[in-house]
Amino acid sequence: MVSFQATIGAILGVFLLGALGYFAFRRRLISQHGLTEISRVLIDLCLPAALFYAMFVQYDPTKTSVLWFVGSAQLLFLVVGMLAMWGLATLWRPPQPIGTLCGLASLQNNVYLPLPIALAVLGPSKHIEVQFVIGCFVLFFTPILWSVGVVLLTRSHTEHAGWWSLAKKGLNPPFFAAIAGLGAKMLWLNTGWQSPKLLLDVLQMLGNATVPLAMLVLGGMLAETQISKALEWRGITAVALVKLLIVPVSALVFLRLVPIADPVVRFIIL
Image 1 (tube, rainbow, N blue to C red):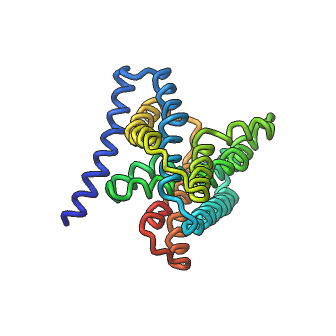
Image 2 (image 1 turned 135 degrees about the vertical axis):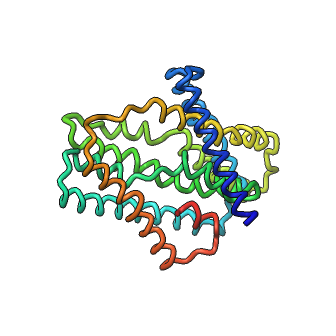
Image 3 (image 1 turned 60 degrees about the horizontal axis):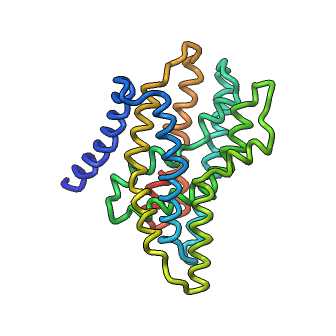
Protein backbone atom coordinates (compact mmCIF):
# COMPACT_ATOMS: atom_id res chain seq x y z
CA MET A 1 0.00 0.00 0.00
CA VAL A 2 2.82 2.39 0.91
CA SER A 3 4.58 1.62 -2.40
CA PHE A 4 1.34 2.20 -4.33
CA GLN A 5 0.76 5.52 -2.58
CA ALA A 6 4.34 6.58 -3.28
CA THR A 7 3.89 5.69 -6.96
CA ILE A 8 0.64 7.64 -7.24
CA GLY A 9 2.24 10.59 -5.47
CA ALA A 10 5.22 10.54 -7.83
CA ILE A 11 2.99 10.44 -10.92
CA LEU A 12 0.80 13.24 -9.56
CA GLY A 13 3.92 15.31 -9.02
CA VAL A 14 4.87 14.87 -12.67
CA PHE A 15 1.40 15.87 -13.87
CA LEU A 16 1.37 18.85 -11.53
CA LEU A 17 4.44 20.07 -13.39
CA GLY A 18 2.44 19.74 -16.60
CA ALA A 19 -0.44 21.66 -15.02
CA LEU A 20 2.04 24.36 -13.99
CA GLY A 21 3.14 24.66 -17.62
CA TYR A 22 -0.50 24.82 -18.72
CA PHE A 23 -1.41 27.66 -16.37
CA ALA A 24 1.89 29.47 -16.94
CA PHE A 25 1.05 29.61 -20.64
CA ARG A 26 -2.57 30.59 -20.00
CA ARG A 27 -1.49 33.36 -17.62
CA ARG A 28 1.11 34.48 -20.18
CA LEU A 29 4.03 33.81 -17.87
CA ILE A 30 5.32 31.81 -20.82
CA SER A 31 4.68 33.18 -24.29
CA GLN A 32 4.44 31.11 -27.45
CA HIS A 33 7.95 32.27 -28.34
CA GLY A 34 9.15 31.37 -24.85
CA LEU A 35 7.61 27.90 -25.15
CA THR A 36 9.47 27.41 -28.42
CA GLU A 37 12.75 28.50 -26.84
CA ILE A 38 12.27 26.20 -23.84
CA SER A 39 11.57 23.35 -26.26
CA ARG A 40 14.82 24.11 -28.08
CA VAL A 41 16.79 24.08 -24.83
CA LEU A 42 15.15 20.77 -23.94
CA ILE A 43 15.69 19.05 -27.30
CA ASP A 44 19.07 20.56 -28.18
CA LEU A 45 20.73 20.60 -24.75
CA CYS A 46 19.10 18.86 -21.77
CA LEU A 47 17.80 15.69 -23.45
CA PRO A 48 21.04 15.09 -25.41
CA ALA A 49 23.00 15.53 -22.17
CA ALA A 50 20.76 13.00 -20.40
CA LEU A 51 21.00 10.48 -23.25
CA PHE A 52 24.79 10.79 -23.64
CA TYR A 53 25.27 10.38 -19.89
CA ALA A 54 22.92 7.40 -19.66
CA MET A 55 24.46 5.65 -22.67
CA PHE A 56 28.01 6.19 -21.42
CA VAL A 57 27.33 5.13 -17.84
CA GLN A 58 24.96 2.22 -18.52
CA TYR A 59 26.20 0.58 -21.71
CA ASP A 60 28.44 -2.44 -21.74
CA PRO A 61 28.73 -5.23 -24.33
CA THR A 62 26.35 -7.44 -22.34
CA LYS A 63 23.54 -4.92 -22.97
CA THR A 64 23.70 -5.09 -26.76
CA SER A 65 20.74 -7.47 -26.65
CA VAL A 66 18.69 -4.73 -24.91
CA LEU A 67 19.32 -2.42 -27.88
CA TRP A 68 18.02 -4.98 -30.36
CA PHE A 69 15.12 -6.04 -28.14
CA VAL A 70 13.94 -2.43 -27.81
CA GLY A 71 14.37 -1.84 -31.55
CA SER A 72 12.39 -4.97 -32.42
CA ALA A 73 9.58 -3.93 -30.08
CA GLN A 74 9.54 -0.46 -31.66
CA LEU A 75 9.18 -1.85 -35.18
CA LEU A 76 6.57 -4.41 -34.12
CA PHE A 77 4.31 -1.84 -32.46
CA LEU A 78 4.69 0.47 -35.47
CA VAL A 79 3.53 -2.26 -37.86
CA VAL A 80 0.69 -3.35 -35.54
CA GLY A 81 -0.54 0.23 -35.19
CA MET A 82 -0.42 0.89 -38.93
CA LEU A 83 -2.20 -2.34 -39.87
CA ALA A 84 -4.88 -1.92 -37.21
CA MET A 85 -5.49 1.68 -38.23
CA TRP A 86 -5.63 0.76 -41.92
CA GLY A 87 -8.21 -1.93 -41.13
CA LEU A 88 -10.40 0.41 -39.06
CA ALA A 89 -10.11 3.19 -41.63
CA THR A 90 -11.14 0.79 -44.39
CA LEU A 91 -14.12 -0.35 -42.32
CA TRP A 92 -15.33 3.03 -40.98
CA ARG A 93 -14.10 5.32 -43.78
CA PRO A 94 -13.34 8.45 -41.71
CA PRO A 95 -12.86 11.71 -43.67
CA GLN A 96 -9.28 12.27 -42.48
CA PRO A 97 -6.43 11.12 -44.77
CA ILE A 98 -5.55 7.51 -44.01
CA GLY A 99 -1.84 8.35 -43.90
CA THR A 100 -2.42 10.92 -41.16
CA LEU A 101 -4.50 8.46 -39.13
CA CYS A 102 -1.91 5.69 -39.53
CA GLY A 103 0.82 8.07 -38.41
CA LEU A 104 -1.13 9.22 -35.36
CA ALA A 105 -1.99 5.64 -34.41
CA SER A 106 1.40 4.00 -34.94
CA LEU A 107 4.08 6.57 -34.07
CA GLN A 108 4.74 6.28 -30.35
CA ASN A 109 5.78 9.00 -27.88
CA ASN A 110 8.99 7.56 -26.46
CA VAL A 111 10.41 10.53 -24.58
CA TYR A 112 8.09 13.28 -23.37
CA LEU A 113 5.59 11.14 -21.46
CA PRO A 114 7.31 7.77 -20.81
CA LEU A 115 10.48 9.39 -19.44
CA PRO A 116 8.96 11.40 -16.57
CA ILE A 117 6.42 8.69 -15.69
CA ALA A 118 9.06 5.94 -15.63
CA LEU A 119 11.39 8.07 -13.53
CA ALA A 120 8.58 8.83 -11.10
CA VAL A 121 7.33 5.25 -10.76
CA LEU A 122 10.63 3.35 -10.73
CA GLY A 123 12.41 5.72 -8.36
CA PRO A 124 15.78 7.50 -8.21
CA SER A 125 17.81 4.27 -8.18
CA LYS A 126 16.61 3.48 -11.72
CA HIS A 127 16.98 6.95 -13.26
CA ILE A 128 20.11 6.27 -15.31
CA GLU A 129 18.84 2.88 -16.50
CA VAL A 130 15.52 4.45 -17.54
CA GLN A 131 17.37 7.09 -19.56
CA PHE A 132 19.49 4.36 -21.16
CA VAL A 133 16.44 2.41 -22.34
CA ILE A 134 14.80 5.63 -23.56
CA GLY A 135 18.03 6.32 -25.46
CA CYS A 136 17.73 2.90 -27.12
CA PHE A 137 14.23 3.84 -28.25
CA VAL A 138 15.52 7.16 -29.61
CA LEU A 139 18.16 5.37 -31.71
CA PHE A 140 15.48 3.36 -33.49
CA PHE A 141 12.56 5.79 -33.35
CA THR A 142 14.23 8.91 -34.77
CA PRO A 143 14.98 7.47 -38.23
CA ILE A 144 11.46 5.98 -38.37
CA LEU A 145 9.80 9.24 -37.34
CA TRP A 146 11.58 11.33 -39.98
CA SER A 147 11.19 8.80 -42.80
CA VAL A 148 8.07 6.65 -42.47
CA GLY A 149 6.36 9.19 -40.20
CA VAL A 150 6.79 12.12 -42.57
CA VAL A 151 5.70 10.04 -45.57
CA LEU A 152 2.52 9.02 -43.72
CA LEU A 153 1.66 12.49 -42.48
CA THR A 154 2.29 14.18 -45.85
CA ARG A 155 0.74 11.48 -48.03
CA SER A 156 -2.32 13.57 -48.82
CA HIS A 157 -0.31 16.71 -49.60
CA THR A 158 0.79 17.71 -53.06
CA GLU A 159 4.35 18.42 -51.89
CA HIS A 160 6.54 15.90 -50.15
CA ALA A 161 9.68 16.60 -48.19
CA GLY A 162 12.89 15.56 -49.92
CA TRP A 163 15.10 12.85 -48.49
CA TRP A 164 17.87 15.33 -47.66
CA SER A 165 15.41 17.44 -45.69
CA LEU A 166 14.21 14.36 -43.81
CA ALA A 167 17.79 13.31 -43.06
CA LYS A 168 18.67 16.72 -41.63
CA LYS A 169 15.66 16.60 -39.31
CA GLY A 170 16.16 12.98 -38.35
CA LEU A 171 19.83 13.44 -37.45
CA ASN A 172 18.98 15.60 -34.46
CA PRO A 173 20.88 16.25 -31.20
CA PRO A 174 19.22 13.46 -29.13
CA PHE A 175 20.01 10.92 -31.85
CA PHE A 176 23.63 12.08 -32.14
CA ALA A 177 23.98 12.17 -28.35
CA ALA A 178 22.82 8.56 -27.97
CA ILE A 179 25.22 7.44 -30.73
CA ALA A 180 28.06 9.50 -29.24
CA GLY A 181 27.46 8.08 -25.77
CA LEU A 182 27.69 4.52 -27.10
CA GLY A 183 30.78 5.35 -29.15
CA ALA A 184 32.52 7.08 -26.25
CA LYS A 185 31.81 4.16 -23.92
CA MET A 186 33.16 1.59 -26.41
CA LEU A 187 36.27 3.74 -26.92
CA TRP A 188 36.73 4.03 -23.15
CA LEU A 189 36.33 0.25 -22.69
CA ASN A 190 38.84 -0.53 -25.43
CA THR A 191 41.49 2.00 -24.44
CA GLY A 192 41.19 2.01 -20.66
CA TRP A 193 41.20 5.81 -20.54
CA GLN A 194 40.15 7.49 -17.34
CA SER A 195 36.45 8.34 -17.16
CA PRO A 196 35.87 12.12 -17.71
CA LYS A 197 34.23 12.70 -14.31
CA LEU A 198 33.90 16.49 -14.58
CA LEU A 199 32.23 16.25 -17.99
CA LEU A 200 29.91 13.50 -16.80
CA ASP A 201 28.92 15.53 -13.73
CA VAL A 202 28.01 18.52 -15.94
CA LEU A 203 26.02 16.30 -18.31
CA GLN A 204 24.19 14.72 -15.38
CA MET A 205 23.19 18.13 -14.01
CA LEU A 206 21.89 19.19 -17.42
CA GLY A 207 20.06 15.89 -17.84
CA ASN A 208 18.34 16.30 -14.48
CA ALA A 209 16.48 19.31 -15.92
CA THR A 210 14.92 17.18 -18.68
CA VAL A 211 11.81 15.98 -16.84
CA PRO A 212 10.63 19.32 -15.37
CA LEU A 213 11.27 21.12 -18.66
CA ALA A 214 9.51 18.38 -20.64
CA MET A 215 6.40 18.59 -18.47
CA LEU A 216 6.35 22.40 -18.61
CA VAL A 217 6.55 22.20 -22.40
CA LEU A 218 3.82 19.54 -22.56
CA GLY A 219 1.53 21.64 -20.37
CA GLY A 220 2.18 24.73 -22.46
CA MET A 221 1.57 22.83 -25.69
CA LEU A 222 -1.74 21.55 -24.30
CA ALA A 223 -2.78 25.10 -23.42
CA GLU A 224 -1.79 26.24 -26.90
CA THR A 225 -3.70 23.50 -28.72
CA GLN A 226 -7.04 24.37 -30.28
CA ILE A 227 -9.46 21.53 -30.92
CA SER A 228 -10.27 21.68 -34.59
CA LYS A 229 -13.87 21.55 -35.73
CA ALA A 230 -12.67 19.43 -38.60
CA LEU A 231 -12.08 16.48 -36.26
CA GLU A 232 -14.65 13.78 -36.76
CA TRP A 233 -15.68 11.03 -34.36
CA ARG A 234 -14.77 8.06 -36.56
CA GLY A 235 -11.15 9.14 -36.95
CA ILE A 236 -10.77 10.06 -33.27
CA THR A 237 -12.37 6.79 -32.15
CA ALA A 238 -10.21 4.70 -34.47
CA VAL A 239 -6.97 6.35 -33.31
CA ALA A 240 -8.02 5.98 -29.65
CA LEU A 241 -8.84 2.29 -30.12
CA VAL A 242 -5.47 1.59 -31.69
CA LYS A 243 -3.39 3.68 -29.26
CA LEU A 244 -5.24 2.79 -26.06
CA LEU A 245 -6.34 -0.79 -26.70
CA ILE A 246 -4.85 -2.64 -29.67
CA VAL A 247 -1.20 -1.57 -29.30
CA PRO A 248 -1.15 -2.00 -25.47
CA VAL A 249 -2.68 -5.48 -25.78
CA SER A 250 -0.06 -6.27 -28.44
CA ALA A 251 2.64 -5.12 -26.01
CA LEU A 252 1.30 -7.44 -23.31
CA VAL A 253 1.23 -10.38 -25.73
CA PHE A 254 4.75 -9.50 -26.93
CA LEU A 255 6.11 -9.47 -23.39
CA ARG A 256 4.33 -12.74 -22.59
CA LEU A 257 5.75 -14.49 -25.67
CA VAL A 258 9.21 -12.93 -25.39
CA PRO A 259 9.81 -12.70 -21.63
CA ILE A 260 12.50 -10.36 -20.36
CA ALA A 261 13.49 -10.10 -16.73
CA ASP A 262 14.56 -6.45 -16.75
CA PRO A 263 11.66 -4.52 -15.11
CA VAL A 264 12.79 -1.19 -16.58
CA VAL A 265 12.62 -2.48 -20.17
CA ARG A 266 9.25 -4.11 -19.53
CA PHE A 267 7.81 -0.96 -17.95
CA ILE A 268 8.95 1.39 -20.71
CA ILE A 269 7.73 -0.94 -23.47
CA LEU A 270 4.31 -0.93 -21.80
